[in-house]
Length: 124
Image: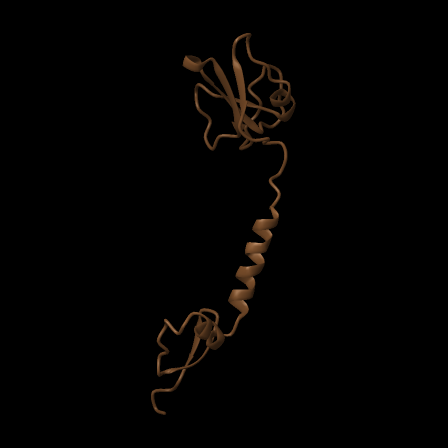
């Protein structure tokens, strides 16, 4: 058996990219990203069939995410990543000064690089 889930439509063998579920009480069809696990009352659809999906008259189609387009990082995501890299690269002494010295320095500690510490020999 192939690990790739296929489109649920008859005679379609393309890989699934979205999952369709129905909320009968609200007359709503919900099309979202591919579910983690195949469920018995859900339908996996390929990109073509998910784009062409229509609902019966009186029903509403809710599209949660476009599963066929890869998610791209926003400007805020990239800025947060750059700030995290700058913070991690800052020497520990300046980081302690900026943080108000909330962290006590171990007398055995000689230097620090990221999560690694250089300790003084117990003989000294």
